[in-house]
Structures are given as structure tokens and as C-alpha cells.
Image 1: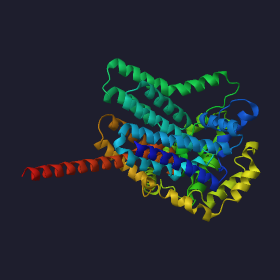
Image 2: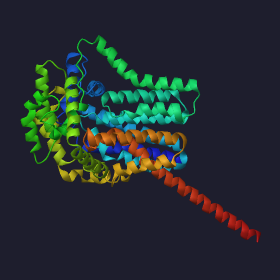
Image 3: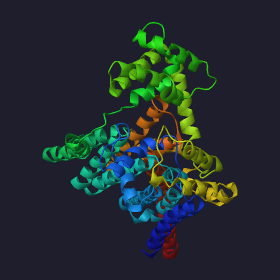
Image 4: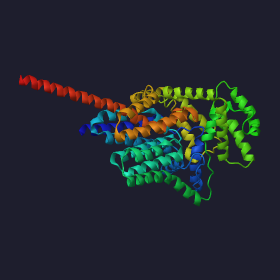
Length: 491
């Protein structure tokens, strides 16, 4: 018990210490090119008192920014709140694993927890004005609640897991398999009576839909509601625009208007879907549809149809791109030891000084003091010790994405009962996102943030299995030595 208290204290100290040290190295938020689209709705709410959520980003991150501005009065407060909630999420992840696996694995589990506390990806994204930290926090809450529901057979925790999954899906639709796995587990794996199954399925469905119902209720009484701006079709077309079937096929009139831009994009030595999405083809399509009185939803549908046609037109090229991205994602992403870096500080300065998609500078951005803080903290030598500390998060070094994929497959074989059900859900969400990031999305490291809890439980699960096997072998050896000693004494 005394050892475990020391381990908990050490974990808390590392969680707090790494974040305080990072703030001393870089005492300002990092603005990005699209940060204005995340913060704009919160600025409008603060200035006018009207709660109008962004049609693309949704309400959740707007609420977090607004809370931070109310508490601290500046955008720096968003960073503080993200780091604080992220630290609590890490503590909850480790605590949930300890509750489920028991005291026998306390030592290896807390060593893994210290690696998570020093993992560079949550530290990096916590310093940016982006919603990936919110996704990490909500993912942690959803999986922790579900694991406690499995451990204690609790409907309340199951409801909490469904609500968290709903809020996460409202923020970014990357948890599609999660409610399906929850329902499948209740119906086929947990052995409940029929009435208990019905109650639990209602908890899952009701909890998942509750955030959407609350948002719909708000919209019914709001004086102004921004129309939805779905992105999945737009993102898919951004990845496939180079294969647009220009001759024949669907929408020939629109294709004629974007032909020159598609051909110019094809001729580029290096393709970048942001050029398609933000500068050329899709903005052109948006203007054409706007002339026809059509909405952003119809733009997204059009882009999806064009993307599907492009894939059918060039299936071999598409699958080659997907395979290349899958390899890059599995082998090249996940290790995050180089933040902060002078280049990222310079990017942040560039985004602040040259604006963001026409975003007006808000007083809470404290522009002058933020620019001064960034300019006076861009010495690479000052970051070296912090980078060395990040490199000590051994659980997330080498090839953490590939290792997680292999670990999940291993745990699905060796785990039993409800522990296997938990890892089945983790594997469903994990591999769904692996496919998503190689087809519709891009294999960018920050998109792993909602998957970090799965990475921790999968990798630490293998460590726990090895630890338990070692204890069994040690116990068997001690029993054999005792039996031999008894035999000698009897002789």
C-alpha cells in the first residue's frame, strides 16, 4: 500500500511537472492558420452574448474556449484548461486500468502511466488552439466509463460512456463503431437477461443521442443558427481530386469550370489536399453552387460523388495511395519528441502576424504580449532537456502505431470475458480510424489524439500480460524449490 501511494504521487508529479515545465519554456499559446475557425464562435459569443455555434466545428470546443475566457480572460487560458483536463484524463486512464487489473500490476502499470504523462503528443496539442485535446479528453472519458461499466456491471457508467461518445461524435465523427460495439456487447457477450438487455440498450442509444437532442433544443429557441457544414465528402474529394474524371460522367458543366484547376493540380510535383480544399477546386465549386442557391450540405454531397467517381476512374492509383499512407501511418507516425521547436514557434508567429482566413484579432488574444513571448522563447538549446524527457516515454517510442495494432490483435487472443470485450471495442475504433486516415483523411500525427487512450491500454496491456506471466513463472519456481527442500529434509 505504501509503495502504491508513492507511485501515485510520482505519477501526479510527472503529469503536473511536464506541463509546468513546458509552459516555462513556451509561455504562450500557439496559433495556427485555422485557429480562427475554432475560436471565432467563442469570440462572437463573448462580444455579443449570442450563443451561435460554428456549423463546421460544432458546439463543444466553442464551449471549452468560452469557459476558459470566462475563467482566465485570455486565450492563454485555453491552453491552461486543455493541459489541466488532459492531465486529469491521463490520471483517469491509469486509475481505470489499475481498478480493472488490480494491485498485482501496480508497478508496471504506473511505469506505463509515467510514459503517458511524458508523451509528447498530448503535450504538443494541448498548447495549440485546436480541438484535438478535447477529442482526447472525451475519448478517455468514454473508454474509462465503459471499462468501469464492464467491471462493476453498472448501467450508470454505461450511460456515461454513451453520452461521452455522443459528445465526441458531435465534435468529430471518428467514433462510429463505439456505440455499435456497446450494443453488440450487451446483446451477445455479457449474458444479461432480456429485460436487462433492453434497459442497457436504451441507456446506450439514449445517452448517445442526448447531446444531439440538447443541441437541437437549443437551435429551436436560438435567434440565429449557423447551417451545418459537413466535411467528410469535401475531405474525401481533397484526397482524390487529381483523378477527377473530366471527360464524361456526372456534373459535366461543373467539371468544365474546374478543369483548368484540376489539370494544374495534377501537374504539381507534390500534391497537397489543402490546396484543393481551401484555395482552388472546392472554393470554386462552392461559389458555383452558391450562385444556384445551394447549401454547404449539397457541396459536401457533390464532393463525395466526385470523389467516388474519381476512385472508380483510377482504382489502382487510389489503393496505391491508401497503401502508402497506411505504411506511413503505421511506421512513421506516433513518436512526438520534437515539440516545442523553433520552426513551430515561427509558424505560430507567422499565423498571428499575418492573420487567419480574415479573422479579426480579438483582445483576448493579447497579440503584442503573445508575439513577444514567442519571439523571446525560440532558442532551440532551451528545448533540448525537454526533448530528452519526451524521449523517455518509452512506451510511445519506436513504432507506437504499429505496436498498438499488433498489441490489440494479441490481446484479443489472450484476453478473456469482459476484458476481451473491452479490447474488441478498442480494436474496432482503432482500425476504423486507421482505414479512415488512409482513405478519407490524411495520416497526420495530430489525428491520433482520440486514439491515445487505446494506445496506452493496448501497449500497457501487453506489459501487464508479460508481468503476470513472469509472476506465475517466479511463483512456480519458488514452489518447485520449496518442494525440493521438503524432499531433502524428509530424506
